[in-house]
Image 1 (tube, rainbow, N blue to C red):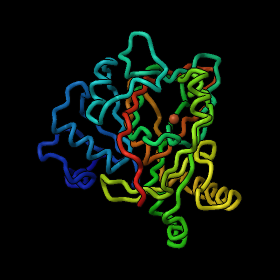
Image 2 (cartoon, rainbow, N blue to C red):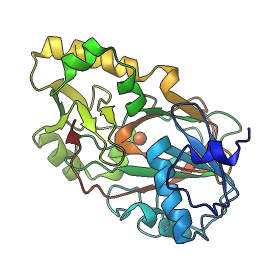
Image 3 (cartoon, helix red, strand yellow):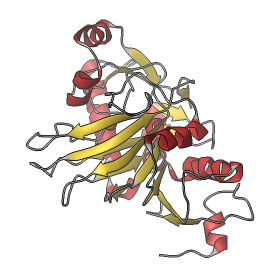
Length: 293
Ligand SMILES: [Fe+2]
């Protein structure tokens, strides 16, 4: 698929006129693939354009990025400070580059739509993965735009959820059990719930987004009785999963993806047992609480 320069520019107002790389939208509402770029050699203008495209498209896929982990950490600094906590450390990697590693004959247990860290006051706004070891096929990751999901709600539902808040709490998962010590997990499980708006406002583009997560994290609606709130949350969580709001990333070696964690849900597909899958992972530090729309 190829786009004329004019079409490409429509995906971002801030592209420089001397833009050298190619941008291909993946679906109408979410995702872009950028080609003809080496992430180890970005100019300031490239970095500015990539940040702008990310705001528009929510997730960007870069293929064939044969870069070192130090170059990966350096690239991710264009989005903020990579965190050194919250990672499964990998010997030989910079402390900001962790691993998502399912070993041969091990089952991946995270196979549901979710956002990372919504149980924090300041969830990571941007996450990234870089594929290193892939199964022969499968192990894809899907991404859904919470802005597109909000836009498609009926006016009645938009009115019904306006001004509501949700309560989020951690639930131990395959990844969190690896990332945190038992004491850290107990501390987080005993911490009070974190309150977030159900409809957030993205300050970067002025768009509203449906801030829901899987019920194991997004436990209840603060202003509603449990039964009523649970039913509404389930309905909204199901709504986000409509294929019109998502794209499916079929990994190839050295594919690198960056996405807006707070404005997306992602789904790692656990269909590749008994094969191995290993990706490097970088998370950007959260600095702002999601704002009420
Ligand atoms: Fe995740």
